[in-house]
Amino acid sequence: MTGHRLFFALRPDEETAERIARFATAEHEARGLQARLRPSRIFHITLHYFGYFDAEPDAELIARASRAASEVVWPAFDLSFDCFRSWGNERSSKHPFVLTGGQGLEAVRELHEALVERLAAHDLPTPERDFQPHLTLRYDKRTAPDWAVDLAGWVAGEFVLVKSPQGQTRHEIIARWPLQG
Image (tube, rainbow, N blue to C red):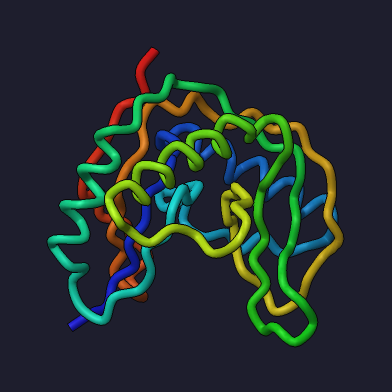
């Protein structure tokens, strides 16, 4: 049986994901880097990660997380990126290359805080580290210097609960919650 990862996320539509992939490829090639991107169909910004499960995620956890998510009332918002960054240290063998940002992702940070507040109210696990919104593009054995970009993201009109079967590079959306307004 395959294990799964479970998380809440913001996801771009297909056209936007392709636009981001084309932009990222051009930016990488302009710097002499190989742009071996993850499939754009799984591009997302994680809002909350529940973890890895050896089998199917617990149905009660999903039900409680869904109840908490349904209590989040948040307006739709624009998001954008202003930096390419590679994370990790020299001891790591897998460095994520991400799009991240400052002010253009502030509404993502605020939505994350509202979601975490509702999860805590339902006695669900909350993050142990600072939240840094980002969209992972690829992984590499080496790091690269950060560089500034100006990339419009998308209008976040919903967030989703995702189950991702280990090693299959796909996301199964369990539930969706609209962002109003």
